[in-house]
Image (cartoon, rainbow, N blue to C red; front, side):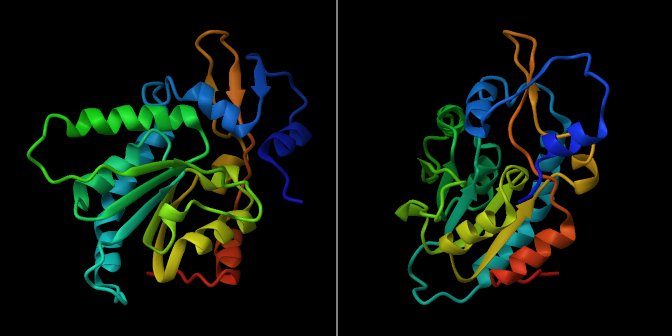
Length: 235
């Protein structure tokens, strides 16, 4: 069984943390985090947003040039673990002609995403942006059963999500969503960072550090498990 970051840190660190830490269920953690997720100054989120801005144009170029059985059908893109819609908005900006689906296990995060996207689009009533479809979906569900609206996607993006999911479950779900020859754009916390830290936030009401379940995935392990599900790295 894959060891969590909590278990790894506990086995190496015998000193008591100065700040109280509470480990809770991942969905419960993100429901709590949703209220401050976009404003708590998390540098990894900021870094990921910069990186995604540089990666999305190339990703979308690959998706748009990929042959499709029905050229008249709009391209479908899925933001898997969309959270507060941080990168869903980037998809809307760069690919407004596509059908965009956002999936997340946290109802709190999806509520924020809905408000954020509506506020971002409301000043531009003349634009032809289609509102994305936002649906609850738990990536830890086995066997994978993603909602029908996400099926046969041309492309999937998933950013800073993999940390919370065992590798086989994650790639099984992506396989259930993507059409054959579809593309996946994936970002994750580097394993060296995962050896000393993990996702989490300070609850402003209690002052307690809240942490969900996280895993330290090495790049070579990600590539290996992805390969078993039929994925290939595109240079």
